[in-house]
Amino acid sequence: MGSYDNTDISYKAAGAETYHLPILYTEDERSSYAAWGIKKEKLLLPFAVATILIDAFVLCATVVYLFVKQRQTPAFSVWISCWGGLVGDVSYGVALVLTVLILKPLDWLLDKIMHRPEEPKMLQVTPKETGVSYFLLRGTTVLAQGMLTWDAWEAALAVETNEILIEGQRLRIGSNTIASIYPPEKQKPWMDHPAEQITGTISLAHIRKNMQGYRASLEEQKREAEWRRQNP
Image 1 (cartoon, rainbow, N blue to C red):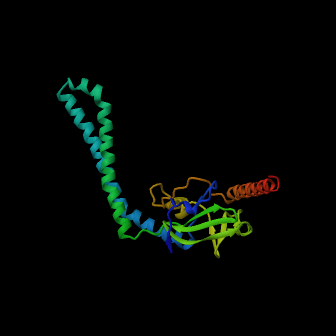
Image 2 (image 1 turned 60 degrees about the vertical axis):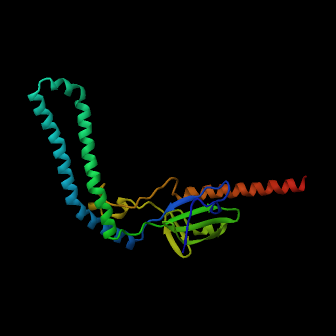
Image 3 (image 1 turned 180 degrees about the vertical axis):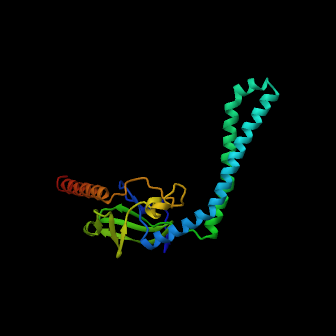
């Protein structure tokens, strides 16, 4: 296995777009990730509740302090009318900082102790003159790489299910979200999930159409070059 550097221009074809396609977890991978995420949630939940209570205490203490101060010093009302909104914003900001300081380090520590599952695989495909080159990655580790001829590329696609056959593996393209990983009763916004960065289309039907356009453009360039060669 090698290491992939997406800044290396040798992996890119001039004028061609590289598609970064997230691969859905297999059922075993999904089940393993879901079990890990649910266990992590149970461990984090008491700390999250404690953080909410601390946040509420900070906000309530600020309100009580300002109220008492206003009763003791009538002139303080003028100051409150001018700066009360800012004080509220600062109090809210302090509460958020406390939340981050408590939960973020704990979240990182649990990832290390509980051995966070591997990130999903990523398939990168780039059209070339003779076909489509591909890299199958997990992080920066290259799991497989090669070149599909144009005919092999067409044969490998199953656009109805958004799947592609690479080296005997049928890979389903899609984003690993909370909805796709966890059972319905555990699909909560705070559940852990892979941080996939998807910037373009992941529809194989759309990519196939783009590839066909790229191939047609290459053929047109070849015909034009041949015509110029014959008609100097």
